[in-house]
Amino acid sequence: MSARRVAGPTDRVVVVGAGLAGLACALHLAGAGREVTVLEREAVPGGRAGLLEHDGYRFDTGPTVLTMPELAADAFAAVGERLSDWLTLERLDPAYRAHYPDGTTLDVRAEVEDTAGEIARLCGPREADGFRRFVRFATRLYRYEMTDFIDRNFDSPLGLLTPDLARLVALGAFRRLAPKVGQFLRDPRTTRLFTFQSMYAGMAPRDALAIYAVIAYMDCVAGVYFPRGGMHALPAAMAAVAAQHGVRFRYGTTVTSVERSGDRAHGVRTADGERIPADVVVLNPDLPVAQRDLLGIRPRRLRYSPSCFLLLAGSPRAYRGAAHHNLHFGRSWDGVFDDLVRRGRLMQDPSLLVTNPTRTDPSLAPPGRQSYYVLAPTPNLDAPIDWRITSGRYRDEIVRTLEARGYHGFAGGLQVVQVTTPLDWQARGMAHGTPFAAAHTFTQTGPFRPSNLWGRNVVFAGSGTRPGVGVPMVLISGRLAAERITGAQRGG
Image (cartoon, rainbow, N blue to C red; front, side, top):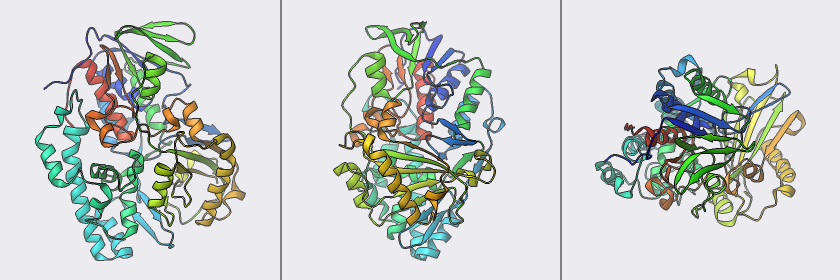
């Protein structure tokens, strides 16, 4: 059954927001012959995948982990271009280095057998065999899930009724993630490494569905990549390609409302009072914020993911034990999720992601300098934390934690420091102060997540709609939004 598409003409499309989803949508629409105008309030494209330049440093301000680059290549291919002609990608090896409180480390390598060897070295051959079985499980999960549940538009939950649904049920995909992974892995070091990704879905591993092991597949099997020039190089390249193929970009343009009569949009209005007509409007801002501020409708009540505190730092100090991406686990594990999700308080025993992008691309900092991206999960703004008071204190606490975990002298080497709190995420237009959007609970997953089609000719793109959170999902959402307009459909 074909998915519903927008009603009426679709020749002129206005895309509000040049985030990854908006850019992917614009490329697919341009390839389908539509006249596309992208309106972006910032001076550069990227949205959450933004850029901060300071004293010779270039910091990514959003995601730092790129997986499934073929999804980005798909957007380039829509206009007959090759990703490799516009962007240089390097596959990271290791993809991650996990640091544990007992002083041990474990590398997730680019090749599965190399990772199995790492696990055998640290945890023994039985655990390595369990990892191989987990990889087979996650690979099948991805294959069944992608075509019928991630990479398609839904108009009804009845769309779930495909042969792959039965395969997923038999595979145990709708059980809980932690116990399912526990069927393969027993060592707490490996179980943490292959379940922490549920944080991106806004759930503790014990509560998340096992279908979210697909994120571990993307990270730990399909591979992690890094674009030369930083993650912001991806949206910059997408925008350049789109412009070359006729997409018109207007930066520094803030859209204040969608002009509509009933459920039909006729265009948008900007902060300067300009009216820009459109046959179709695509909204890339955070979905509930776009509903409230641009459409003037009340958003559905949703449960939101935890947020994060982000520390960007420039320093002359380098650390031999660090990889490009480093996961630093505290002694507590369930306690981390209890703090973030149930108690609404800062982690008492933090687990952190530390990315050191200059290890791969030294051009991102002045000669002899290093850049660091430190992400600490926090509750979202539903928690009673006053970030105006807490921000400085928590920054100092994170720095002390880093020094205790091997980044000796980190505080003394800081030359450039910039922090982002949940209050800052909210100011950037993210509901409840979280860049991770609505949590992927069962009732907010797949066809139960907010639809990407509203009214007769308004389409949403981004992490707040289907399929969900993360760079791969956001790129897919851009294509799914375009398919709502063009009527084209393609599987996985």
